[in-house]
Image 1 (cartoon, rainbow, N blue to C red):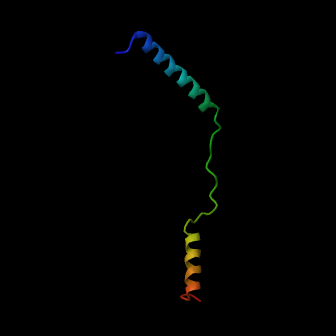
Image 2: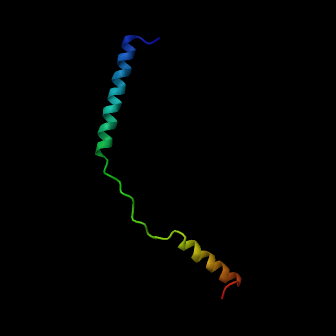
Image 3: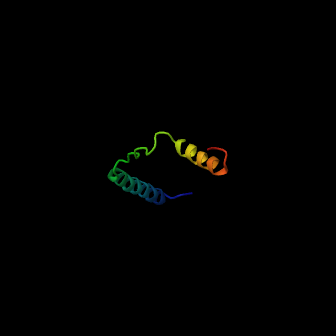
Length: 60
C-alpha cells in the first residue's frame, strides 16, 4: 500500500511530466506531407514490367 507521501510524489512527477511534454509538443512545427512525386503509383511498376518483358523477348 502506498503512503500519502508516495502518492503526492507520484502525482507531482506525473504533473511535471505532463508539463514537460506539453511544452515540447507545443514547440514542434506542424508537419505537412510532401507533395507526391508521381500521381500514378503503378506507373513505375508498369515501366519495370515492360522493360522485363522486352528484355525477355516477349515485347518488341
